[in-house]
Image: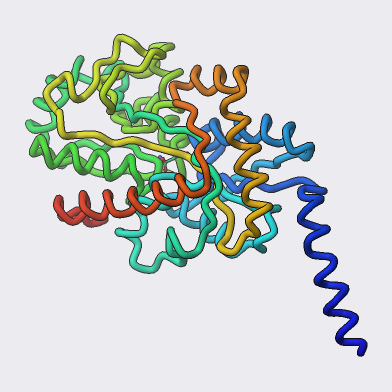
Length: 318
Ligand code: GLU
């Protein structure tokens, strides 16, 4: 009898709790360092989504292993919607093919919520670097095999792989210097310690604007309005080379549909809000805010696409 009552009480409590969701602050795990692109776009979107939900969304940076530490924590969180994470092309697209001991499956262990934004990538160099443009860079790299390094946000992440792939195309060899995110990679690039950096656009663009870095090429079909003078890789002859970054909210597997949808609607509405969209546009990112189903399909497609790129180019971590 007591057991029955307890079960009934629990059953009654569950929908009530979901209807009230969220009744306390939500944690958004950003798996890269503060000041990096995931952090920048995550904080802009979280501020507005929190306003819409009537609860604060607290960003927690859990860095390391190309974002996979923060994503492992997200996958293992209680599936109640109070802990979600910001997945990226690195954590869900590239890492699964390169980290044999990865503690999660990018599809099975998560509930997709909404992909917030996409962004191009940019190759930049320190102003003192000998090459002035992409053609000069290619020539310089070919002439100095294994003698220089490029800074990137994490081994096996999209910036490391994007560069490995480009080096294969041009027949060049450089050393990968990986950090716990774009922010520390940029610190070393701007100071000239590692004068080449391949990065997601939102974190690099301010340094290129201010002249602390020289932008050589961006990925994607079009130039970015934030840096209209930096040409694309495609217009400089590398038509088949494209690397896009994205940042989307995921929860652990088994998130109740009502909670998932409430979060998805809030985040989608947030990135489409004119003031928030303008802030995102200032970073050079493109607001998306798609549905859980659309984002789920995208994660699978990105995982498969990068699996293909990695297998075809026979990319392995150094
Ligand atoms: N390059 C990483 C990615 O797109 C993000 C790095 C960072 O946020 O610092 O997955």
